[in-house]
Image (cartoon, rainbow, N blue to C red; front, top):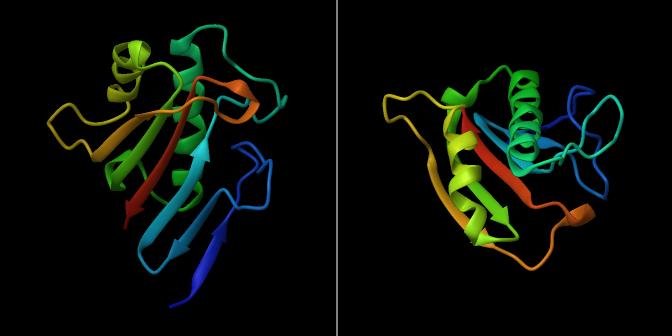
Length: 128
């Protein structure tokens, strides 16, 4: 199976030895995204809602670069630093998917720290 590297300037450049995403056959594996604003490189984390929106914008940009949308997403993993903020993150996250119940499978895990000390990181798997 051939794998294709997906990188777009519309999402943050990787901050380590990884790619934004890998397309393997019909499956897209998106690396965890944080709230980096692609044009400026600054963190957009004034509050948890803004932070989550920026993460979702970054994910959408990568999906678009692979000719996909949130409709193609089958699995997500959400890493958060404070489970008490879960409902706020979940409210923003849910707005990016169809409200007809076509949400992907998911787990949410509390971790002690994330890159650049942000509060939210989300990775995805999508299928064409």
